Length: 356
Image 1 (cartoon, rainbow, N blue to C red):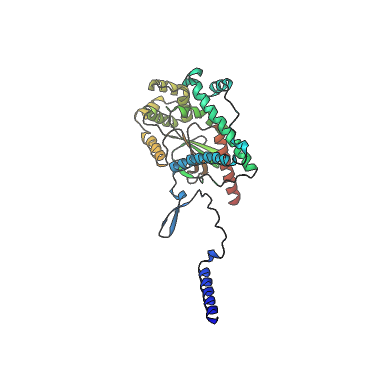
Image 2 (cartoon, rainbow, N blue to C red; image 1 turned 45 degrees about the horizontal axis):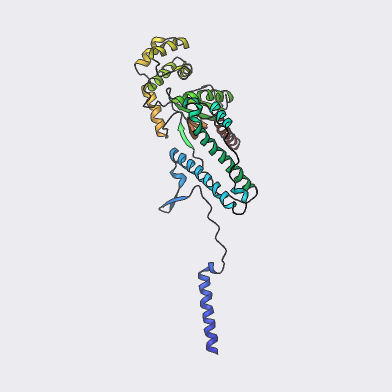
């Protein structure tokens, strides 16, 4: 009997030691779920970690944003799919149908649509586009309903902002006297690029809206397949010598065609008020500013620019001559410009209060 008791005590002691060594068996609190991280550790080197954000450049950021958009769409559809098992209303498809009037209005009110073909030719593509758009609206409405009711919680976050630091270099400023600007819009453009031409009207509106808080600068990025674009860029730099940069820049975007000749440009600069025509002609013919334009191209390539127009929009440090912000490509909308400018005005305003 005594031997049996000793054996029992020994067994309990062994079990107790085993449980101490493996505390998870005693305290079995569940491990918290691994929520999605938008800046995971991707490597360790000599004990130091490397995060995803450490690898970023402009193109990686663009790819991450596109990937996030795809993930978000897939997530919303999966949420509705799961909810439909208990809530049949989530299994219904959109009741919105594409009518002939919808197609006609889209065709008539979408810029550039008529250049692609007649209404009859474009009808099928427009219907497909609108059906997909209606479906997206339906998914978004149902998804927001699920969030509001607390039936779904989402932990998928967009990639962290990537702040590109770009020097303004020899950019032509819209207002050299503007000493109060806290935000900068740096444009890289090509005079033979149709999207560059299209965005100029928007830029004029934005400059009028923010005459003091925002500085604007222009640099050249003539694309290699636009044969005359580099020469035209050099021409506006020659006009800059006589304080007519913006006049000739505007003329190019408003009047330039594939058939435009150097004679037409020379006729234009006379009308624009360039006084010393001989000086302008010599400057342009001798390629005085060829290196400046090439330097613009080189700087643009270094920061990741591949097409035009491209904008770097962000906080402005006039002492260092740099913009720290985000990159946008294409004919950016007025709404996107305003939203981003307001964001950086708020950021720089807060910084100014913290560092008076």
